[in-house]
Length: 306
Image (cartoon, rainbow, N blue to C red; front, top):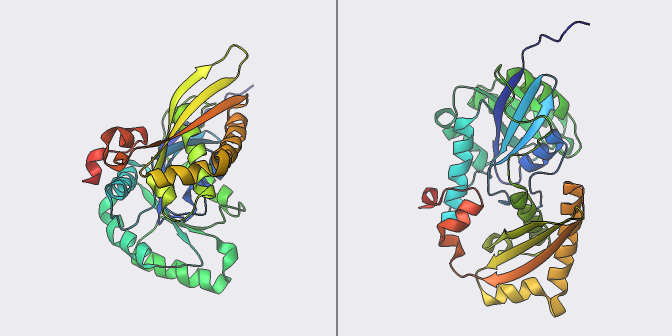
């Protein structure tokens, strides 16, 4: 038998773009498991979530950054700072845009900052949701984007349906630097399980609620208890800023929070591969958006929001 002498590769890949460009969907498809919150609402990713994918001899560590947008609140500013920090620290950057939206004002602003914000690594363009436009539109958009910035490569993809994703993954595996793997082979994310569980609950809340409420709540896993039968008990607190929000979350006779808890419990159990017993509480904390501890729980730097 001959030994495989191919050098191993490993590196960090930052996915950047406007909110709702499909970054979380792409990350989850690349990793092959759900490690990042995916909803139809914008600005749902808060922490820089790393998902770990294997392609041949390469280990690709994805940094799913918050969407880049015009920040108004402290939380917004901290999220944008985290996004650009993730890009600056990465070995490879992938800018994702939506094919049907094209070169929006937000994309223009990202392009204006891209050269100064990213490191020395390769920068690829991934045009997502290609099934929504004609090929002639894609060609014009590709030309316009590459005229604004010299991308190393351009990929046409559909993160949701999987078109072109394998080509991007193979390219990334050949582009990250040579070196030893950064994580064990069976590890798919470097977030603590308790934070992943909190994100899953927050996703269900975001899908269930409407208007501004989802952005004024946060979920924390207060207690994680391993049981003798192999199951786990998880106690989580949902913080909201007003009493009225608490009533909305609880719903009539507690029906809303019960439905959210059931959906989250099923998904957490599937992710862990064992039964999870989930218990949710809703607490009013008017100033949680201005508390450093809450930002640390989300993996954000409080000082970046000032």
